[in-house]
Image 1 (cartoon, rainbow, N blue to C red):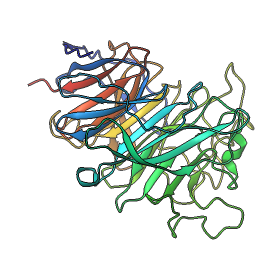
Image 2: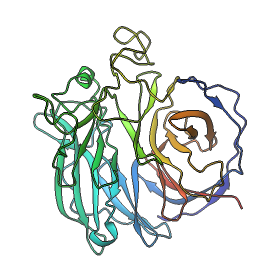
Image 3: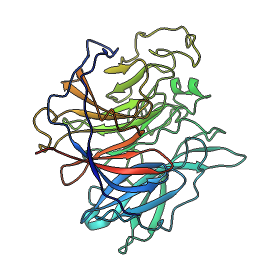
Image 4: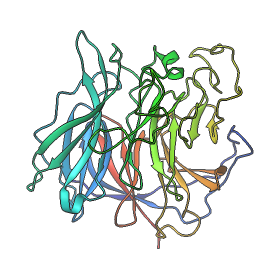
Length: 379
């Protein structure tokens, strides 16, 4: 199932202005446009890609499969050893990262929708060891399971980031009809959690000493965060889907409330305010950036490589599911000052965005015949 092709994609000058917190303008391309290379295709709704050395990659498929992609684009058979996965609606096998010590321990972490009783489910995070022949997962352990489980096909969140020092962040959706839970601390809905690699709770988590609060919680008031990455300063950044408008970029701090569903720049599907229809309230954090109309963001990475020139370095790349392009955001401290919409002719939902060990940017497109793409700089 290998396929390799290259085609340049034009980057037209943007005429629209992005509605956002603060003054943000859309700009034309300031550097030579990259060339899109198809590394692999025939992937069913791929969700995440991770790099395992020697040019090989692991890819998750939402229906519940994990596969090795060879350097020549060959797609391997599904790995054995995955736990039971409830692949319904937006759920399934979702994010994947390798451990910072993967070269020696071959450990990885993946999150997925975990089935419960009576049609319920929740987001779960597992660790495992990739076998030496890369055909199966060994020593699989569920290290976190979102509580409570509910009957829902929506809003699983499910992005994983390893922080400096080895702790894990996991983003969790509000499960849609349980959106009010995002404002209470006795559950994991609409939260970012922080745990150790064995599932234990770090003693400096903000709510460890609060009675009735889930000790894993790092921040709350989130809707459906499907992107997370470490900034150049080593801090966690996330982005989340708004309801109809109001997609957000945040930098979650310990113990802070990011407002959903009390404050939002979005509205109900079909129109109409959510709650009091307000965008700000004392004690609730404002997003660093918001998109109205929604772009349906998924996957994000900060560019650390020099391979695309100085204009790209330090930028934040975010995939758009709705408008099917790659957004490049220029950052000044914690402010988004410009957006450049890349690959407008791609015509595919951009689900994941990663920077590989070769310094190149990789994308996954979310489709029944999804693709793994690589962006080659123009010389």
